Length: 121
Image (tube, rainbow, N blue to C red):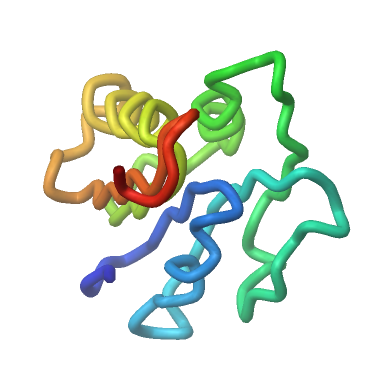
């Protein structure tokens, strides 16, 4: 899913677990955040220690962007992979591109679902 880069950022909810461990080079630095319903909902991932896990707050939409802002990411270039609910994915891409000045092509997005819909309906 991601090409070569000096570092990678993974952002997503529980649907993102299939994409998160796919870093081409295991020596590449990885940061990221994963939203789950709680500690028992965390999927086993090869690089789980590189992720900031947070519990979903159904009352506070947009939590994903707030958590990404709080990661304290370095200013060096890299690639980002954002997977999950469509609105959160788009908001996170806007933050990375407009807010952090990253090239749009350096942010891969996969909006897997929308509230009230199943799959990619």
